[in-house]
Image (cartoon, rainbow, N blue to C red; front, side, top):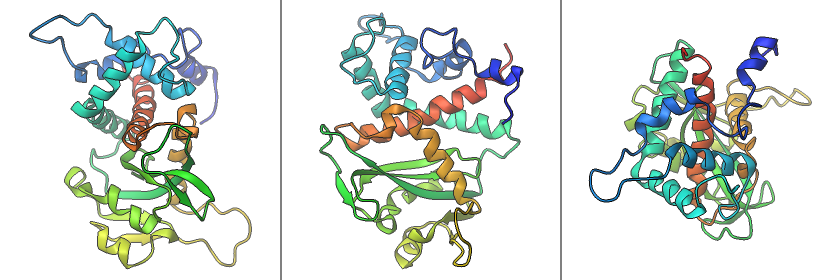
Length: 274
C-alpha cells in the first residue's frame, strides 16, 4: 500500500485516547453482537465499549490484566466479560460477520475455496503451565499457534497447543469441523511440514504441498505460503502476542481471534459510510 495524505488520514488514530481504542464506526460494526441489557435482575452499568477498549488495550500493548490504566473499568470486570464472551461465542459471531464484510470489500464470495495452513511457535511466560512443550526444530519452549487462512490472509480457524506437537499431528486440530463452517473449500495448501499420510488422513480436503526449490539460493517468496506467514506477522504485531504469557491455551487462542477482529474491524470501518 502506498502512503499518501489520504491513506494516512484513514489510519491516523492520534486523536483517540489510546491508539488501541475503537472509533465510533468500528464499535458500530460489533455492538449488535454484544450482550444486551439483562431482562431480569440488576441493570448493567458498565459500558461495553469501555470493556472492549480495555481488551484491545491489553492485546495491543501487552498489558497484564492486573495493570490496566485507571480510566478503564475494573480489571475483574474486564476479565469477566472477556471470559463470558469466550464461552458465550460473541467472539465467533463478531469474527464471522467481519470476515464476510472483508471478503465483500475485496469482491470475493463469502465462502472461501482455498485454505492455507501454517504454525508459529511462541515462547511462553512464567505464568503459563497449560499445553506447554518444546519445539526441537525451532528450539522454543512454549506453545504453537496453528492457523488456517484464506487467500486474503483472513483467519478461518486457529488452535493453540503445545509446541512439542509436530505440525503433522497438530494439523488435525484446526481441521476439526472445518468443512462444517466452510463447506466450499476445495484445497488446503501447506509447506513440507504437512507432507505425509497423517495429514492426508486428517485433512477434509486434498492437501497441496508448496516446497522450496532445491536449486534456488537465498530468500524465496513461495506461492500462497507467504500469505499465511503475513497473517502471523499481523497477529504478532500486537505485543501481547509476541510472547505467550497466558495461563491457559484457550485464552491464548481467544486473543489470536481478537487480534483478527481488531484488524478486520479497522479495515471495514474505513469503507463504511459516515
